[in-house]
Length: 384
Image (tube, rainbow, N blue to C red; front, side, top):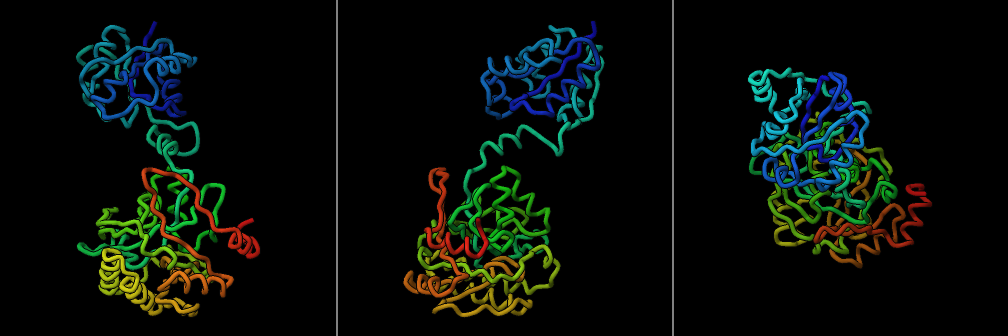
């Protein structure tokens, strides 16, 4: 009888593991699966066990291609299974191509006279699935805010980053979910970042893959009024709840198509972008909407120079600008008082109130517009 031995954390059993077990079993007549118990998993690999040891053993043992399940017990990151393997006396040790300790395992097998086989990591389903991805989906929120950006946009794109400069933005409610989206989609409020967060994907990687920056998923995951350091990845400078903006923000649906990736290559005066962001940072730091408005208006002037269409005056706004860099979609409007904001919203059918959103103590809650705005959205065909 030819025994084959495999080991791993198998923390969240998924299709990739099943394929690995099947491929390994095909190398012999008897498959032995080894995993580190919960205390060793934590001590050696800094991973929390999702299942307790008895449950993990029961699940793996129930698989048709698995003949025996044993525990790895050695205090060795690369060879925690050493004692279990020697006791089981297999003829083959199988690993996958992404194993971090291939060379150490190869040398160990050479010393012990055991055949060492490296299997291609094959995913039977579409896409790549890992335990980390499964856990990310489980931990993903049910509801997420979107965002408005005040200044510094494009400085979150790695090739445009300027050390020592900033990106300033704020997460907003109403929140969205995978089944309820209370805004026009693809309209400059960071919707693709929000969608990634809700699905448990790597949202920063998803956004950078589109050729745009990381600010959308960063502020959506962080929440609050945030100041970020310009660079290759999100580094938070500071944040507050954004409460000083409550009753002072609205978004206006321009009804013009918005597509940020189409404008990535535009040549911009990034020194002026950075100057506006420094002022916006001061506005958030001082919680002063008037200072923030100066930065928003400077950002808008740059958008006009880039070729975006002029925005209408709606009420007595302090400042306005397009959200994002896609030459359309929603525009942010700032007002001195809630009364001025509400009057503008009442006067314009395409304007909606938004509020700063800051998740506290991990609270995952839905925040919706009041019914009259939902009815307006239905009439406009934004939601059903």
